[in-house]
Image (cartoon, rainbow, N blue to C red):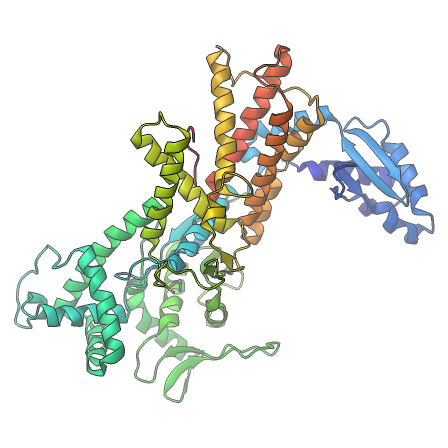
Length: 589
Ligand code: ARG
């Protein structure tokens, strides 16, 4: 479906052309003076030089040509040579009706579905999820939904850190605490126990203890490194123990991500490409991509145009061990061979940007990917506390994601109980969680991903201003009006949209027509904040209309049903918007 702005640009361009000017001058933009007009065209200003004419003479000519065009309510030429444009109400209404019949409200769908893999979440198994993992999950989930909505075939992969030193630390600690476990008995034959020798809460205590100890106790650290190597080399007992760690942790991770309304199609991890590494390393060597440097194996990735140093990509350390990027490269290799994606998207802390520059360059140079494969890095900034420093608990420790969410859930629960005393407990809890998620996710997503932001819970949970709860509140308000309309025995579905009869209504209708522009721009730049900005404006335009209009009390039935149709449309667009952000609205709040 053509965008509204393109349709009107075409009319204005045609007018320029038929008056003997360059068509290109007819480009229209959204007005930066909404008090004066809806769209504007500055082409006469640009044309003035080219045609040696005063700009207002050109503007006058164009305005004259568009006088009788029924897409416009008015086209005014104003000095020194601008065109101020207002659209016809019928044209806007017809556009909305068409948009409602289109798939995805007119968002352009590609001819074929490009395959995209998105790497987000990135939790480290057996370590508690902390707020640092929140951003990757929240932004990644939204980008996944936006890319799907814009016609891509998207696969989300969690890419767990499940193969590193943390495993050796846990194994070594367990070996000390429970040396009699069969996993540590080299003589053990037959199967290992089915039950894990620890619960998730025990596991969560083992890791921090072992990690703290390794910082003081050199011997313990060496043992943990040795255990990591044994595990990776395939020690049977250690592998069995590792499977327990994985199962117990993944069950917990699934619970946590579900609570966040975040899901993954693939639950792969670093361990999954362990076997791929030797073949990939041989390939890089035999094709002459990798060379030895001070005992290590590296691929040079610096480019002449670099203004900052980009160090070589280290593939193997001098002791032959692989590194974080070896795993990432092997993962790229596997993803390409198994899924043949057209693009890979990584949602990772922006402090890893240089690292991903190296990895991407290395993948291109070694032809693990095709020249045309898209490799995108969405680097996000830090979530800070009100003091401007990385977010901490009140006691100053690392805040666990679970605790953060339940704190906000509780806060919302008491507010909802206060506001709606007759609400039953189950609904109050469910609603509280929905509002909490909207607060957290919108608070994050309304910022450009690369920016640091301040996690200000009082601001994020407010029902007013640019917040998730404000958007939900608007949705709930619309739902309640529509419900009452149906209670009058009338059908929302059958309500017919008419031309706007007030300025506020027209503004709201115009805003509705811009949905696809917002979604496409968010998809193109991988920026969910564009959707936040759009639904915030839409909610504001709706609320201005609502405060000025009697809706259910309107006595003219035609007007009333038109209002209802517009409300139903606004609701659909808002609900689609929040779904793309990864949260949903309750029935009441
Ligand atoms: N596990 C990593 C961390 O916590 C993030 C993984 C990001 N993804 C990737 N493919 N390297 O920092």
